[in-house]
Length: 461
Image (cartoon, rainbow, N blue to C red; front, side, top):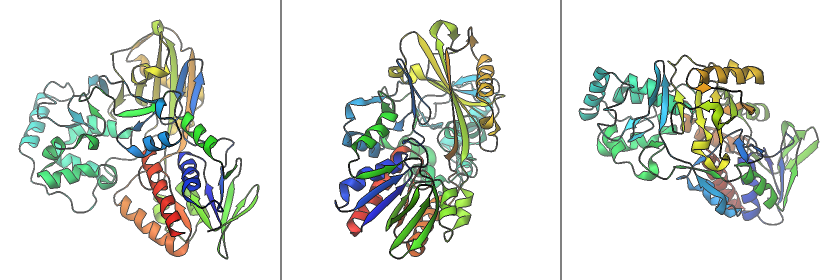
């Protein structure tokens, strides 16, 4: 091995460079090329005064240790903060409803979890209780299935449509009825196989397997950094000693040459015997025409926008004390969720202010993402105005868009990723694929995947 070139300067590419410097011999040349003028990719923190507002992801699941390990590796362990906990709500067509306690992603851990919920009618609650206590005669799937179909057969449509789908839409892109169960929540199926049905499987989940459990812990399950997640990507860049970083470098094509590859870029050609591509699937199709283009073509990302609104505390009356709400598709609004930042991340907001981060754009209904900043702000304020009293305009607004966002994890996603990588090994040896399109959309998933691939590359010599 003579040299390695990493394409993409987001968290995955920066992690690849960091661990390449750790594991690869000192005589290996490392380059990182990034098409934009900044590093960090989807991670970007807007800071003004005492405020720290995330433009992209705002946290990671703390139980996934790969990101915590990386944070400690770069010397930011003392900066880790956990999210504030409190009641969250779901917005249905008839208003806001508290999310029942003792649930994981809307699935009950206790048969009485939904006893007092206003999300279900008495008849629907009785039907859910009957399904939990006398599970339907369905077998745990042996192969991948649609997550929506899997859950509907076990807890019914009302809870899936009114609670589980809204919660999942904030994590995974795509239609829940087309989404892979094994690539998103394999612990559901594993628990059913071990304990006989989904309900018993959920009740026996280990704490580290639980995602977004409501009302069960005093310590938040998510983590961030005191100065925002951008402090991690900034620190990664600072810690790179052997890596040549080339910004504003757009790769136009990848050519095969003897012993490796040539990147054709707007800043000249780069030859390398190993490539690590952390770019969207559409670019993989462009760069590597001999791979399975059908799978890559199917992974069309879901575009989203966020609108963060900074208010003086006296200028807005929040409808409840809590961390925010998600919206069901039956709600007559455009926004898909709203986080009360000062409640969820109190370190990021000074006393005397409320900061609301509003999310917009659903799969198949993301036209709002292309609207002007002014229209996005107006849409957010209109929808919020139906739920709370807004007495004055926000002091500041921060609009962000994510067009190359979250790719859908369709049924058989993991199988197709394995097949793609096997094909890559045959037709493009020496090229690795990493990022949210493959092994998990969370930052810890991306970090873990590229870390493992760099270690394997070093062991190959």
